[in-house]
Amino acid sequence: MATLAISPDQDALLGDVHIGAPPERIFAAITDPRQLLQWWGQAGLYRCTDWSSDVRVGGKWRSEGKGEDGVAFSVEGEYLEVDPPRLLVYTWRSSWMQFRQSTVSWELIPHGQGTLVKIRHAGLARDPEAAKSYGSGWPRVLAWMQAFVEKGQTIESRGRAAS
Image (tube, rainbow, N blue to C red; front, side):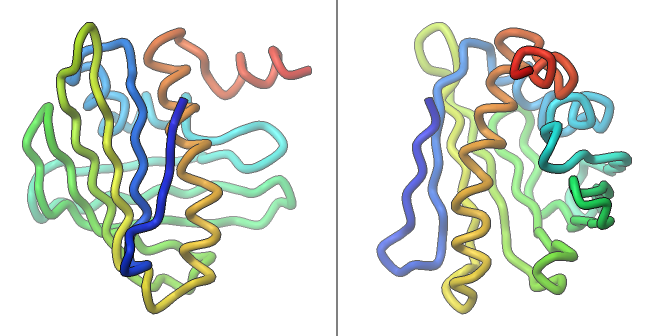
């Protein structure tokens, strides 16, 4: 189960989850556009329809999709650090937050028979609205990714299981 906290300075959301898979498998799930489109989203909430990425320092990434209300959204950024399979850091600019920039980092630490995944979404102190929005979103994202990596669950199979 994913945990999430806010840093003492209110600038970053700090989450973690233990996943029963090696770091290489998780790194692929968070960098491969084909895999990301399979798990990042939920029926009745939003769905990513396109994802592109150039996974290298200075490379760009972009995700597009539609919310349940039919409104289009996008998220984009640039890779700042890429150290497979242990670290991925990128900027984050979302259309629903008027493209204000923050930074997301994923740290993948081998732990027992799996991996401790630590996520940090920083640059939020000046924007309590964004912190609140992302604070409710990241635990879902971590759970979706965990279900995909451990059990092969996709947006479609999770949707069928919930109905």
